[in-house]
Image 1 (tube, helix red, strand yellow):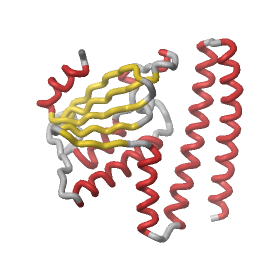
Image 2: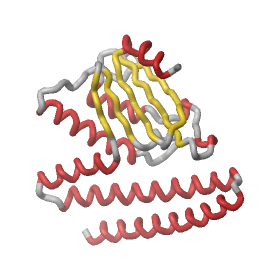
Image 3: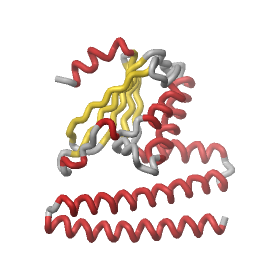
Image 4: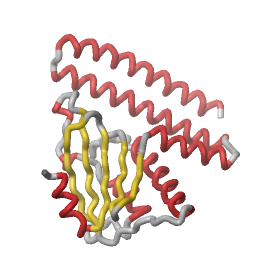
Length: 220
């Protein structure tokens, strides 16, 4: 226990150092407005974020070990979904998932910040649907549409090619709860990028027959 707490404190100190360096880079970028300065800032913020996620993961594991009250731990998981701002809805045969983050780059080494909260959110949503006697969809042949929303106030250089998106892990999580299979014969994927007030990802899962009319509305 003491060793884990020491490791968590070390990660917290590292995250604080990276954030301090990020603040310095913000000041430099504000003065120069150079694209290279923004890239350095981006790299530093990503490092700080990944360190923070490692700290979060360590604390999650620690909480699982020390919290013996099952109801208290269930409440903790519910609060995680709320904190991460993940929303799930099902209407008109279309499952919609909203997350206030962008899907990671496929080369990123640390991606649990999205997938683990998604897994918890799906798990709790499915349980609640069953308790309330509502439908939990299961798609036999479907299209999964990723709508990538980028903050229009930030540099356009942030917008990535669609083939650089790490969709596999997201599909794996969705498949565990809602798909018969995530194989190519069962799932088609679509990616759309739009500018918005803030970064976010919206994911729509629907029977393939519904896709043409859905896409027509978004492509206008």
